[in-house]
Length: 134
Image (cartoon, rainbow, N blue to C red; front, side):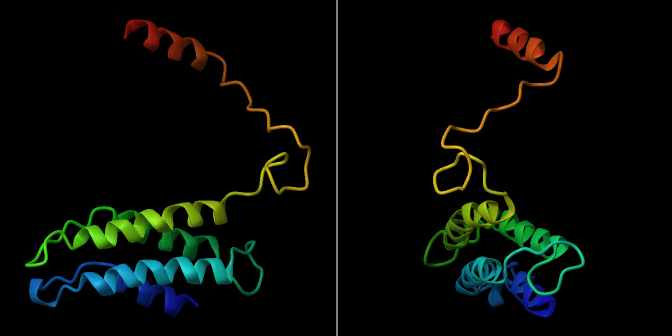
């Protein structure tokens, strides 16, 4: 699994030589990283199988890097293909890394929405002062 992630992460990055740059490969690598993540899932440290936290972070960082792909060629803004794949990748990756909320639709918890905890002491006052200044 680490070798597959490393190969896909490398394929998702622009090549150093402009003539070798292939936006389709980068787009497909981002999509494959998401599919691999969803198929393997995340595992707790020390567990067998699945993605470890460092591997998942490597995948997520590759997707974040893809948001900066602004390559153009005779077809126009081909980097947008990679950025679009990154946009489609972000939500599934975030959902994979976020535990389900109690009370969220489809969860086994209470049917009421999860309560947000109040901001730390002093932070609410700073936010109110910042809003008043605007």
